[in-house]
Length: 79
Image (cartoon, rainbow, N blue to C red):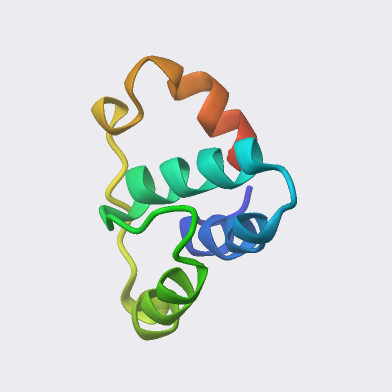
């Protein structure tokens, strides 16, 4: 099973997906995992934040962060 850093790294390219639903779910998942507040339209900000923080990243995930669609969003990330 992939570690959290790898999961975040693999999710980031989905912020550029042509489907808006994919981008929104990716951003929601990343927000829940990282505690950051960037939107799906802030691809560069996500990338900059990740480049600075990936070496000392600690997952911020809690069930509460995901709300009622927790299972769906976790599956989307491939967790």
